[in-house]
Amino acid sequence: MLRKLLIFKAGLQKYGTGLKIQTYLSSLVKDPAKNVTGYLCIIEHQPVYTTGVRHREYGSDIEHRLTNLGAEFYRTKRGGLITFHGPGQLVVYPILNLAHFQPKVKWYIESLEKVIIDVCKHYNLTAYTTPDTGVWVNEKKVCAMGIRVSQYITTHGIALNCNTNLSWFEEVVPCGLVGKKRLL
Image (cartoon, rainbow, N blue to C red; front, side, top):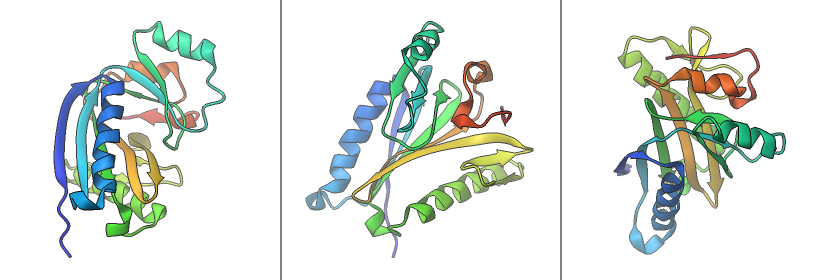
């Protein structure tokens, strides 16, 4: 069965705006009367550090230090630990009802990873997965993932470093992966 997804191009936005867009689009996907399978929200963020549900280790001192660098700081309900989003990074929030696809989180994560591997292949990059969630090229993480699934509705998503200023990542341990590197 062919499923139609609508593309929502948000452009460069503050993170709070991105959260509002996700909330709005997920409300449309949740409403059976709207008959919407899902959206792909494509967005680029102003500099922001975000944490996932395991954010207890990121106290107000760390938040203050990072915001003093000129970035926003948000504690979110997605999976994963701390990461950075900013200009030059392609962020995609698939807002889907997994009940219309395969209602399994593992399937969803593996599908996202496969899409990124295919994108990298298009650019002659050999990408692969590891036991750490995300996609890698030459032992460097090129794509981070942090998702949330509630009542089969997905929010948050993937961040693919395209032309990102990687110095922002030096301020944190991205995704909690000590000693790993990001790829330009």
